[in-house]
Image (cartoon, rainbow, N blue to C red; front, side, top):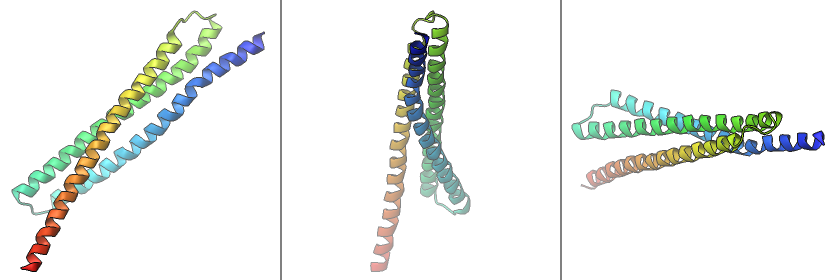
Length: 159
């Protein structure tokens, strides 16, 4: 009888591992995104430092730098939520085992921890989704600017 219970407990402890895997994957993605934001921000700061810009170009650069700052904050909050989710899922697994040893006195604690983990993942996903939208917005603005410069250059050559 103990052996069947033992396997049931181990099986229940492993269920959060699926959430842990998904969370770890999102966290890796978030860390890569943060690295890209940092690289882009450094490039913008170098360009700002090296360039002799008019007021319009300086305002554009300030806008892009502020956008990168907001992106980095969203990725940071997303990462923090994913770390919290990992903690909740590990807590879920541990509470399942502890609950079994305490003759199921913890009540709904394992379920509550699992729900908190899923909610943290959900909130992180929203933050990372917003950051992705900002990344595309920044890319579009930079493409529009480069395209406008190329058109002006072609016009000047044609004249």
